[in-house]
Length: 628
Image 1: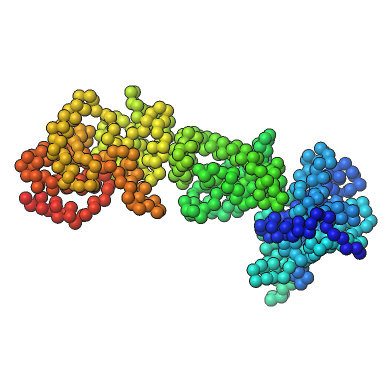
Image 2: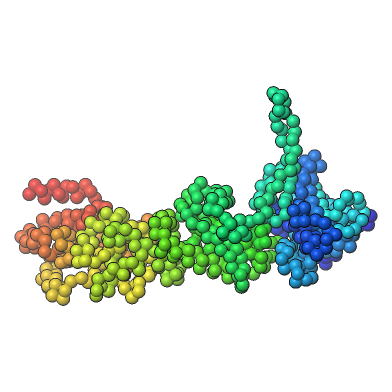
């Protein structure tokens, strides 16, 4: 036996491997299993052209063994094995990858999915082990050798006995400390869970012997230990199978098991591409939003696999925020991973994949909207707010991408409608899309302004979500049709003759309207007559960019000071008897006139769904005027 030194430029490199490169200790098992899989692939590739190998694909396997007393985990394979020279070359030189060399040797390996490429994954074993022993026998050789190391101080290679070709990696697990419980890696169920999480789709069986007590048949109260091998991995990923071979119940079972949902997904997206962005993806649209979906604790992202090996549970870069409701995974063979295989070396490939995934999700939603309307409306009920946020966010950067996916309840049959559907039903000569905002559809429908617009034969969109009006405002227009709030002063539905008559009425009663504004105070920006309210006496409109509903939404936001104020206008129906009453009172009894002005403002608040500032004062004022 001869002590040997690592052939890296510095022992610090191995120390960095152990302590810095990998952020998650549990991935050591993923790395060792991936190496075992690569070793099997090399021998399997040889078996395709060499009948002497005598092994079929079904004969290859990876075995996990745990010895709690000796504190060891062993990972064994019946792959190509290593000679003394291989052990010295591959394990004595940090960052030397035998798998990468094999992949580069010949184009014929194109069909063999070797995983390793950096030659550092093996050293992750030292994150949890204080000693690692590798016993290996190369295929076709009569000699076996043991490589052993306790870390940066070096390693030894000695001859040993081994019955068959292949490699066994024996990791002696560190003792527990106050901060690290290494003993968890000696629990067979913990190891089983890690294999399921990280190596479930390694395409060779990963087996482990489980010992359990079972009742002895025919002998009450007697038990015996039964040991049996269990295959811990699925091997063939569902997403690598042809869609025609997969039944809906298989998709549903995979989704519920993988993403811990109690309901079947609403929609399945199974796709693959080749070319610049080569990947397979299996994605799901849930039926309902997770309980934390609209909180800061929610994490978006798709699981990212490379050749069936899990790289990260949630890769946020794969989904835009407005499609964050999508669950699923992406598996690519061409990702440029960093040295730890935990993140990407460069993000160009990932961005390309993300763009194609975004287009695919949008395409699937468009097809659902067109061909499965009820299903789409169910989806939109759960996640429509997120699409609206997406259209509004970042100053409307994605509004054109999302505008045709949005639904708003319309006065036309009071059903959800797209903007395209609204425009298709517009009256000849109509140049605006009318909308109104409020707490509920019924309350919006009762607004005087809504009734007036609908009475003229125009359709109105009912906006009930806080984000709705912000989304409409940021969009500005749709197919050349501007959006107009029915409560906006710029609502232009009157004839020129009616406009001139109204302008004259406001000019003639300017002093009276000014007095009404002074009586109400800072609650209103101005008071004026209107001729668009049909039978209603009063209403509240706004001037400027902030509507009543936007004021409410902005002041309700976390951290808001509540100081956002809309420029409220009290409008009095010029054709209503209340207008005549106000004119009469202004001429005869200005004190009572001022009280009526306050009362009309409160009534307008009630009609619009706005809270009265002082209900007690309002009640007293009503009683006072009723008893006169």
